[in-house]
Length: 354
Image 1 (cartoon, rainbow, N blue to C red):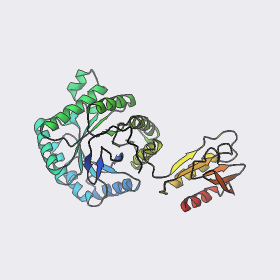
Image 2 (image 1 turned 90 degrees about the vertical axis):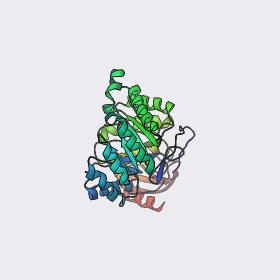
Image 3 (image 1 turned 135 degrees about the vertical axis):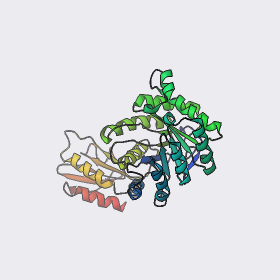
Image 4 (image 1 turned 90 degrees about the horizontal axis):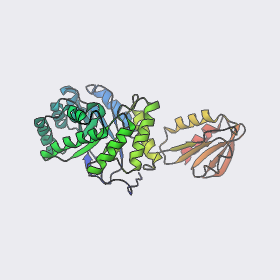
């Protein structure tokens, strides 16, 4: 993993299971299961799918004591750190910590009683379990909403910091923040503000972003903007759908910013009137089949000689269309000419040899 820290805001380094968030740690990708946590095997199976596609941290909803107790069973079968998502019932946070969870996510908008906070902080400190203060635009404290005449970036920040102050009052500072809204501008503004006033690591993302078709765009704009400004230590692309897509989208964002280098980088031209091959179909097929390949290479699929070996010469391997045929090239040097109906198989075979 290659990460440029020259512009990244330095934050406190916090341990979550066997990985770290903040400081000089790589930016991690998170997701959350949508199984019933009480369905232990189903939850394990989903987390394993997330692991296989590159997820670094998984979160589960803890809705009752049975789901809290399931944590100990789930942890035995997975490789990545596990986070308990807690709302309303502080006792579920206690039970989750006792069952070995690696991190707890609390929402200050629905869990603000000082005695409850004291009990959670005490056990979390004893077990060295970090707490993410997760503020969403839909669950800001009513008093703060009234103060700012609605949900605002200032209100999100104040809600998070005031809750951290309560944890700190009880001697707990193993803290992370997230302050997400479904609004991209509000989320960016909120993270910029909190980044100026804290050393705690920041979990970034857009809440309720939408389906993969629309949510990926909103998340990419918000997360990409923040990361390009050096803000953010871990991320989740929240999508309505298969959560493997969240991890894939997170990896794509990090690759686009050249924060992560591992994995296949796929590039293709937009096509124009010079194209004499079915490039769109071929590009889609190549991209789909590349998902099973784990190599640190750049692959290009280009439509004609203009956008071929010359313009894509930085690619490790690629193809460029002619009239019903393709050139195969590596680092801009042509290695052969193949028919359109064979080129995808030829390309994938060559990629496996790289």
